[in-house]
Image 1 (cartoon, one colour):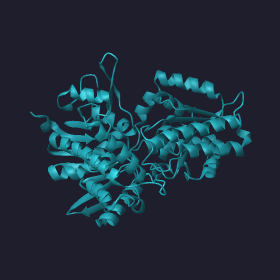
Image 2 (image 1 turned 30 degrees about the vertical axis):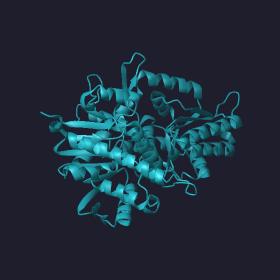
Image 3 (image 1 turned 120 degrees about the vertical axis):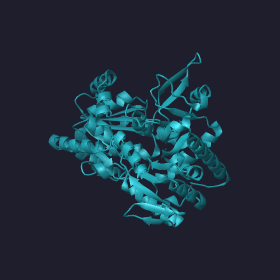
Image 4 (image 1 turned 90 degrees about the horizontal axis):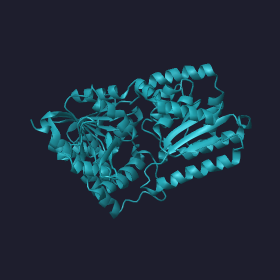
Length: 484
């Protein structure tokens, strides 16, 4: 039996469930891949209840990944002990990958969908951009070719995120027998902002996604924005009541699937000894003070600097809280290949130091900033939180807003109205305008003085909403959508 005859469910994403590094002796060391998408899907793909005949296809991101691919027939790096499930990595030329990933996916599409451009200065779509777009197209073509090669007749293919928007259309052209979905884990820009893209590029992105039978989004507002773009940019026929888009002779269904958290698995991990050790250390550091927690990557859309500004304004306006509250801000560096992100991380560190210099005393550190990624410590911080601050400028969902209430039964949630999670959690969170520093400062104070009984009652409801669609159910819903 050839491999493609077995692969009836295929998952495609830029990042895979594992990554490889080279040890000094040349041996390959494997560890779990990073990122929220990977965390959400890894257990589904490799678990006992994974769909039969499933194959995950991803990029080789590092030198170690490429070495693993070259040592593996056909790029199939799933081996005993890796616990990945069937996995194929694609060895895309590093220069092509860099242009596709950094220049287009993360510096163009991400910026468009998160409304991040400083428009007096950027974007500039010139000849260099066109060459970078060709690399993005080539990157997508590599995925489409691998999926076409591996998929059994009539297989279901689940394409993930903004890195791979062109894949469904490409796959439709070569394998019309396949059932294809595309899922966007980011927001989708409204038409007036999406139209910043050159017209032909915007049309290519939309048409690429519309090559899918099913286009999925994390929140209703992102699905609506996508349909609005299809209508205004392509002249597509949109039926909002039925959530369908008809264009170029075929119809794509649009679905809303708000990815949640597996509460049981999260608690099991958060109860392990390394987390318990961090809980003890953090409690020793914070004492009996109230604890405000934020956990984020230093990603521009996460709005960390304005969150620090709000905390500073809160301290300035409420001296009665001096010595009685500590802000644990875990801000893990992200995308340091891009200069904007390096500068943003530096800005976070500068502003944190200003707060410490202004308010800190010999016996009170008002702010603890940590930029060293440590998942166990993050889980420990959730467990001691009294207030959780999640204030992104714009976010497809935000799993931090869902994980926190599960692990802290007494935490009040201060949540940006611009996070996809606000649609599910807004009734029991304290919603803020992410640009309103003073309003966020007021919300922090309201969260701290909220009666304990009210905090706990809200947290119970937040936890129930956060676990309503855990990854396994979310994944099953996607497969069901492709079967109809």
